[in-house]
Length: 440
Image 1 (tube, rainbow, N blue to C red):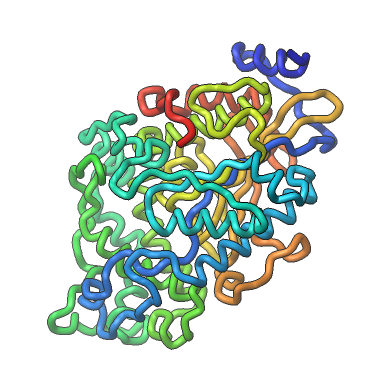
Image 2 (cartoon, rainbow, N blue to C red):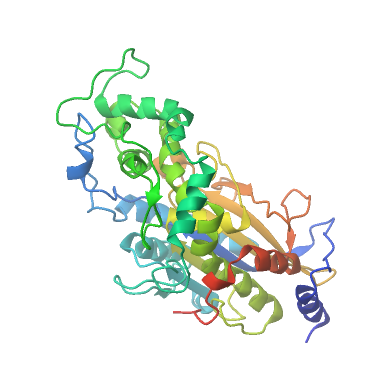
């Protein structure tokens, strides 16, 4: 065993030990883990339901409900092509796709839009190679992304209810005042009157005013741990606006011509609120996100030590791991570690179409020690809408991620791997992580 590997393992076992931060970046990229959301899709709720919320018919996407669009696939391939440029520059990929394909691992959750996104990303990353995307059957529960459904994680429904209501001071209706501006803008868009009109017009006959449904929190089910009352229907009503814009629909069809890109971002606070409560509430984040978080950390340790570990992904020689799932998966994962980000044009912690959490395992060339450098990378709404070519000179937007309890104070918030192992021991719920599940 190499000296630096032995030191890594020793420090991981003794929490009082710390790896020194590197004042100069002499690191070399050894592995990258990309944990992303699917790209542009159609509305996840049928238009027949959506049209009961608005005076005008919702635009029709070119594909069925909840599916990746052709533009979404193209955008994901463009994103994969950018990663190809970056990882080749970093020396992690060689440019020989057939050879590089032997050291990549892809996994997607069971949804068509995530599988198709992973395949499109792979087509951009390694265009001349056949890349296998691992996934479970459509009626299965992948323990990596759905640990509750797979029976890996233990969920206490009463604790979930208490944890969410506790964040709201026991009063879900307090959200009505906190999000008054977003609710007012949403209502004006759905009912077709100028924002700020006073008094606001009455609800048109036969329509449902989703902004007026009580935002009460009640106990949910194993598949939906809490019931957020009207917030679920409200999120469904506003979710299409981001996708309409990113899909490149005519301006007159994006929010029926009533929304600028800034307005779309503001309204997205309502859909992001559901993730804030359902996935980033600390108790629920630990239950829903611990298994994938455990696999990510153990995969980096596996790569650093060169020793196969249970509960990891790929093999010790795997250089690139790509996981494609949904925004709720990214929200729960980031909730486990307390990760926060903001990119131009998006709300804080919003996972845009195709957006990715990126974890770089790097090794100091002078000391042999390993660090983790984390970031959030995503195409901006305008890059999506305009299908902007991504290059090293014109990259997608990115933000470094600070990992609480681990990151040092440099510009990229580097985190010694041994410290991340220790942080994960406290952050990850051992009852919600399965060390036997790994590769599909």
